[in-house]
Length: 368
Ligand SMILES: Nc1ncnc2c1ncn2[C@@H]1O[C@H](COP(=O)(O)OP(=O)(O)OP(=O)(O)O)[C@@H](O)[C@H]1O
Ligand SMILES: [Mg+2]
Image (cartoon, rainbow, N blue to C red; front, side, top):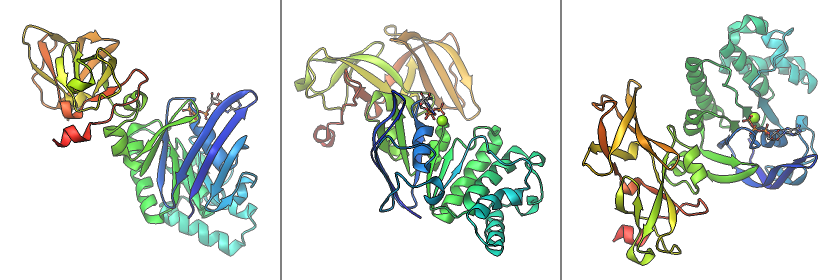
């Protein structure tokens, strides 16, 4: 087990700056998940930690040692890829033993470690098969077994489940979580999947264009996103954003006027903002409520999606560019074509300034 520390880490490919001044600490035994849009640098960051790419600038430490120039094999890091990358001509046993052979482990040691790993991952029955004789989920388990057999201090995963079908993903996600509990090893995991990120992570790192946008627990990122980008990225369906104008200036408390909602007193601290400041109001679909139409500010239900346990209701006209979404538990009586009025759970509303930074909750006023 080990911690990983990134200090002002940078990566350039030719003249293209890909990873920009990344500072991060992954604690011993922690499960950290990297998320962010395609091309933001998640895989590159993982490959820098593994030693598969060279570091352009900054420092990478594993526990107390600077490992910038240490070859991958000596870093004590195992990596699992999306593509499995198993050797097709080798059996499951040979695939798992391969790294140990290269590391000159003796035969008895190899057998012991492979069998132990196979037991943990329930691969014992499959050790003599070739990869083509396995299902997708079994192949992914072998890929994990191969990374684990060397007993690395740190396990890195790059979208390991994205080639699996939905039910297998759920099953493997559960297995990875249990593996982490059992082994207690330090894990860094890249995914596009919201549910994987929220359920597996002790800590989520949101990356944007090669920089860290925010780091925090799943709950912190969901409830207190620091920027509009994080607010829009975490959570599905995505947060509703509406233009909101500050009414009467900060002295009058934080009151905003938003289309379709009239005037709302919010809990945020608007100091530093002028009267008339153009802000952005963010409301998650479950915090947008529907009421009987009251004549003014009416919205029309244009689509209702029934998902079994919950219902998504889509509303027109659009506000700014946003097609507003309301989410509620099923069943629901809302019908396409119905006119409705909107209400907002003020205590769950978010407010972003002109530079897309979240306004903090005004603690004193909140307590008063
Ligand atoms: N070897 C390379 N040479 C030049 N550019 C590269 C190289 N590897 C990655 N890049 C560029 O670096 C950027 C980040 O790539 P990276 O693969 O890290 O993104 P990602 O966040 O993992 O994206 P995805 O979610 O699509 O997997 C991209 O713009 C990519 O084109
Ligand atoms: Mg990637």
